[in-house]
Length: 188
Image (cartoon, rainbow, N blue to C red; front, side):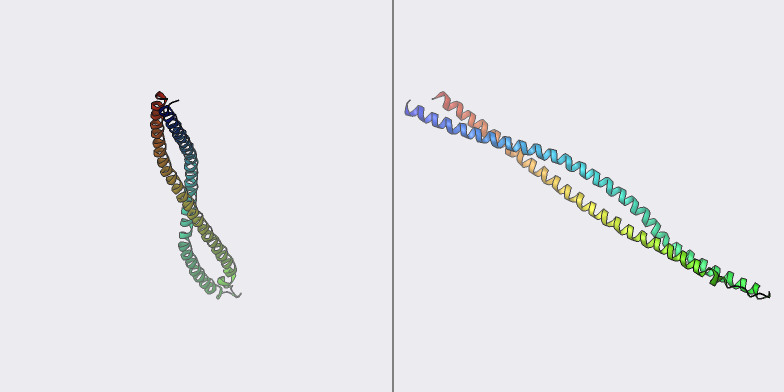
């Protein structure tokens, strides 16, 4: 073998090595792109599921907000019923004062029932406020998870773009190495 043929053989070997390296890098990039695309689909499914869950919690929270806002009108109704009970009691006492038996004070008779009712309803509204706060916390948590997943998906898209460009560069390297291999093969 002549020195020129030996040089072409060495150059061919280097070009082949460059071709194989570029081919391996291109395959690695394409495999990672496939993984990113598979993960993206999982992320999008998870985002959709979390959005549906968030919407459900927001609907529940809206209904509870309406109930809690009715607490103000309930408090007004209680004050109104207390004043009406007081007027009725005064009227009953006035009627009873004309009879021989001592009339009962309606405020005293109904105060325990009123007190129990007020306490029960206050407990219900307190529980509603606690549930509302729990729903708000859950909605905030879901928003955070959605945001995290959206960021992960955007990062995946950026990585996919980078890898696509990288795979194209490797394909170009492969073409250049293949041309060098063909040239040196003819002169061996």
